Picture 1 (cartoon, chains in turn red, blue):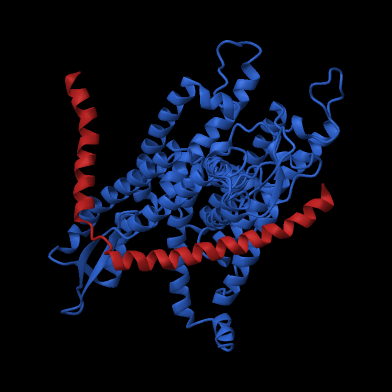
Picture 2 (tube, chains in turn yellow, brown):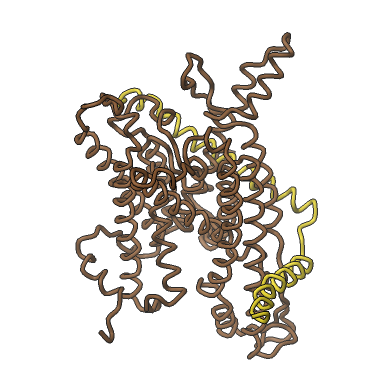
Length: 67
Length: 478
């Protein structure tokens, strides 16, 4: 029984050990790279949002027609 | 029953289900853009309200699902009432069934693959019908059906309206399923449902911030702007600091419309995800055919992207929908047993039970997504075995390792990467939810993380196509 419990706790502990070791080993983006990506993604995301929202605005007159 | 497979049951439906045909020849880059954009526009038209409901119905429906609506782009009182939930649920069911070897399918075989896809579509169609029946049976729309008062005793049950609403919900859900199929058969970029999710989360992000529509407040005669920051700017009174302070407080806490708290949670989640996206381990590789050809092969921390998180929330959303049904169906028999767990917002904010449940939910999200990440790293197209096979075909090997140990090496790295990535992203999402993100944080996490995958595919295609007519035409203006 005690063996079973030990096994049960072993999996998460092992997982945290492996995971934190992995994250430490990872190469991380430096600040310059990070800001560059944020700029690119941000512009893309906002552009997409604006286009999507513009289409949504077209709905307003249609909404008045059908409701 | 030897040789009988569940998949064969699908065969009966093969001739009667509508199907998107595979493209005859390779779709060119420009055509793919056109397909993607037009599908997206059709998808956005699902935000039109359901015919047969009152005006501004979305504010009068008592909403048990408010905290995961934005994740599946379920828009209240519109044709997208179920959003992408049927498609995603059926997709995950089939993938997991294959991953756990519950059904026997050989995805290398063309017929099997076709049956697999048809099975997904069929499940999605059936789920749409089930959800519709549940919603109408429980009386989700009763408050807002035109010309019907549920409180009035002896009033006629509006069978006609029920039928009409059900028809609209089902058929739109089927159209969404087919739109997703268009993407998945190679006409668009990336996976259809993820593409729609990105679009939806980006649109909501903008609309929540600067939406210009003006809606009436429920139970009062005031009006407010939909966008949180726009409403704040509009109500700014520079000469009355007390009023201004109240408005700022209100902008962060209003309930009926999006508030600034959700916006900042979304922003924070985006920044974290972009950072995490670039965490990777670089495995040094070398060519076995040519000497001195050294390179690196990156393994990302977010190996499965946001799929594990999406999976966890899909499960929870389905549980909540069925809980909604059982609460209603069982309440006459066990009035004391069934708490109103997912009742109105006020009830939810004030009870301790719901607090306990949100903690359980948070743990469930984390555990489910870690479990899924572990499974997914073996069943997806980029499992350790697939990658090492790919390496062998291209004559690549890991530096300092023999050919045979490539699979072993990847087996050591990839599951750890995908599980820890999924764990971290789930924790970020759960923290956002805890502070009142109401699913907005999760939806942008899923959106941004999937956007990277699709962007990658887009860039590769772009380079292979050697530019596009669109960019050539645009560069003419400069």
